[in-house]
Length: 178
Image 1 (spheres, rainbow, N blue to C red):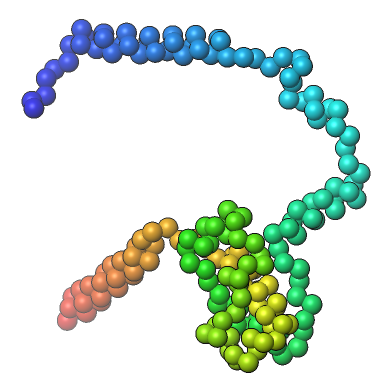
Image 2 (spheres, helix red, strand yellow):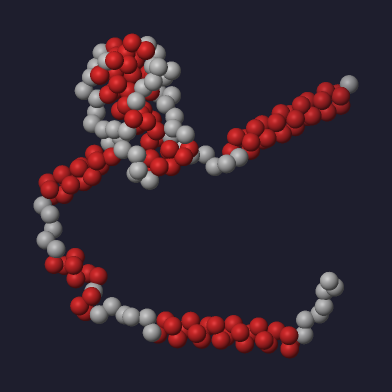
């Protein structure tokens, strides 16, 4: 399709349409309900009695601890093994998205150790090991990063390009001196 020269008359229809849409938006904005004195958003805040400082801290702490497991009370060799085994715990991307949305609690079976993740399968019967593993696996999943699609491909491609440029520069400089 060949490009044609636009004349001022061909743009007047577009200008008229834009002005009409703008006027309609202004008219709709005029009919939007305004806040009245009885429905003011600050009215509830003024009438609500503020909590004492210690109760606010308790409420904040309770909200924060609702998603987290309590710190593991266990120590010793099984707890150290659980910490070491849970260090490499990773959730699949779909489960990680559910965890971030708050749909998977910290006590879920997703964070239990398995025979493949445990350094010693005999420890799977030790409740201290299991609770400590679950605690550290949940924390590892909370810190897990969701990489966008193609990140590894992009990083690998950049590494290949860098290596090729370095090799090309080495070849160029080695032949130019000789």
